[in-house]
Image (cartoon, rainbow, N blue to C red; front, top):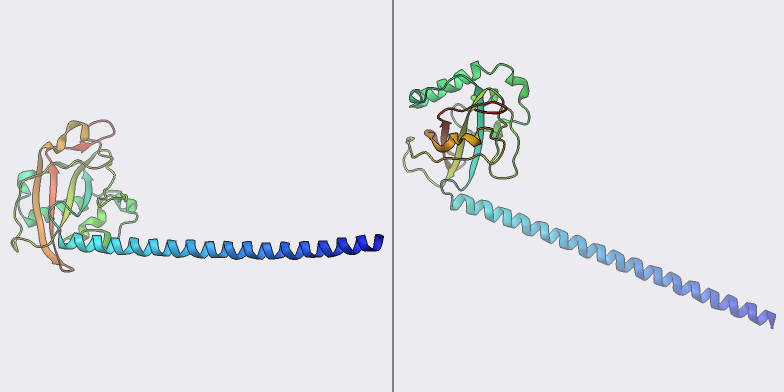
Length: 225
């Protein structure tokens, strides 16, 4: 009787372990299948996102209009006055940048994360190297933080499918409010913005129209303009 009990117990226990291992193996297989399915879904989502990004970029190039795809650079120059009437042609704009480079003072060591590729590729792009550091913004715009005591204006690049003429031309000024960190916004200095066409050139198959917008008077400080 005792022998039978031990035999029965051993036999039952042995089978219990056997089924337990099968259950564990089945669970592991199910988990692996679920993980593989999740990975496949993630890969499909990534591929869809990439396709949508490519389609969006192509649509941006095909349907490009003024103001649709913009990259804005806010350039700060030490607070010398800017004679708006003097900025009437390309050479005047170049001399304006020469003045900015000459007056850059200690801005050289502030340049961080600014490469030539990030800057607007036009005739005097090298003048950007001595400007303020940039700060990335998670939109089509990226701008530069304003510094106290610096003269501020913006340079706006607008992608065009085509340019109307080979030469640059004037157009109506459009007030533009920076999306963040503009210390002068309370005074509405951008109600009167002076626009000037700098260059219109073909780059990578896309015509670019570049304009400079200069406020009437905006010397930024910590508290007021």
